[in-house]
Length: 406
Ligand SMILES: [Zn+2]
Figure 1: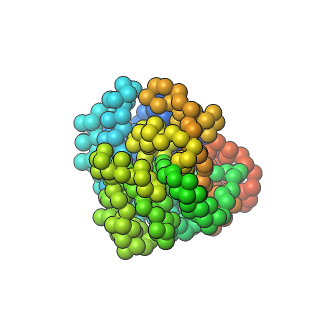
Figure 2: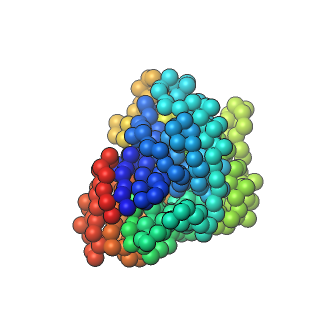
Figure 3: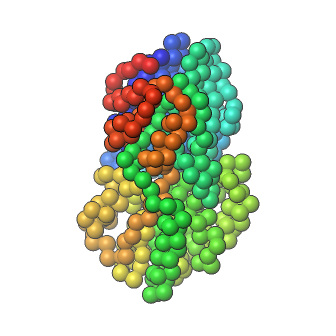
């Protein structure tokens, strides 16, 4: 078999992987970096089917382009295919507002949704000489890795999380010959999750005690829902705004893909959902506001920052801040770009590592458990740090565009 990364090989983001399995060609993920302006992967060749691992823009944001070039089935789990359109329509909307170029339009999003073909965990899709099945990766509700089988087994993971969180069960290794695995956290470990959660709750209390509100930017899919569950045993007045609210509601239709669904449902009923500006005013008198966007590149969070830019209020980042985003600029310089004006953020800015990715040691354990003879590391900036610790398997570190055999 042959492979090629259109993006996301030697970098985190805009992933696209073409698998050439003799008779058929498949595309796994096709994402963009939602930076300003967005960054795109290389254009994809014509393929026989597309498989999506999960509903994050760096894995699905380029898929509408395929409606014009490669009209074919796009497979994913029901939650992935239910949430993806929300992100895609929003991407078109943002590019119109900000007049950035995007290689597709709204009509292409409409068309690609027509090609969406849901498959559940464990389902097998059959092609002439290959079968492909999907399995949990613990990263997001419905996130999946694909096992491709002919005379060889190839496992393509997308993003993975090893630990059990409040929302999801962690990934389990599967026996394979070739393992294509993400390496976002190569060379880095996460602090114990329990400590992060305690610190998060205490920090909200601290801000509230001095009369402030904690504004918590969170990625719409996965992070926002996990944070809700982290706050389950508190008596905070919790508000939710933006796309995190719409995605949380869509996930109510997919109970199988959430670990403690009755508790999730109860929690979503208990919080206050922000539907208009009146709610927004009220929310600023509450304890905590969970809102998009997670990297401060748009969404209601910018409105909260401009209205609450005072040291008594908290601004709590909860995820990785990609280069060229407002969030990264905030961490590095203390400023953000508010509607074109560089603004000093005076709020109490803190960072909490609620990552949905396996850390270095967890990645190694997962790889070992799959017992592969070849490991291909992708979606990482420090892949060498992981590569040097993998024993008993050949390790490939392909660059974007390079065609490699395995
Ligand atoms: Zn992801």
